[in-house]
Length: 287
Image 1 (cartoon, rainbow, N blue to C red):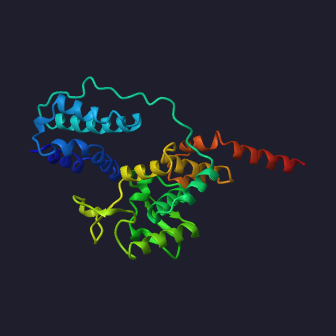
Image 2: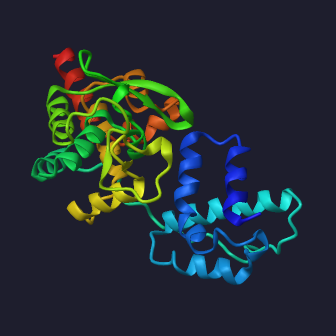
Image 3: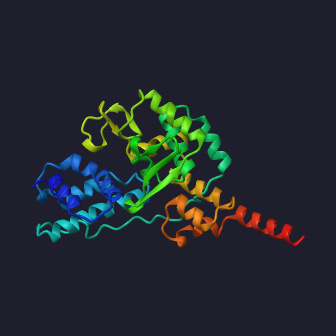
């Protein structure tokens, strides 16, 4: 059996959410491009060291995510009885250090988004910001998921939990312009590559041969527009803005797709604008 074939069995037999399977496939794609057709026993310490060395330039969080995907796959291989050496025995995660502030200044974000002229990119990043979406959630949208009369989209959230997102008229206009530029498709992936795919997964292919945009491609696009900002900060900013403008915890939970109110503490506890508004409202009530 080839390494790639074993990996496909690993994913098919797992209980991972669809997002996790897609992430694992994307993270380990460089490894399988190099030796996917080799037998399982070809997964040696030298091969793993070469793969990880090529990931050194990545951000620590990305490196650690790819390492975790590989570690999970290797653990599964050994559990299946394949006698391969423990190729990750001495490999450690990279320290990720202090995280950058997650929420950005909303006015700066919106100013940047208005400067984007590419129809697809402008629609994608405005949609993420408008709906507080995870990037993977936006990229997973199919055109059939959109209800134009309601201006809503069925989102497959983290852990394959569905929720409904309601978009603004402005974002609806951007989506309409983007789809018009694509020739007005009515089915298939919403956000696709600008060149036809060579080896796409069938489920992520449009009728005319274009593939669904991947997270890696979207992240590269975002870095082109703003190298200093993390793509995920769009979501954090969107949620923080609403926390500062009287969204209740329940409202924020529905908007963000978080299943636990505890997960929302980062947006509420340190939100200066929300605290200021509450204090002024209390002052007026007392006066």
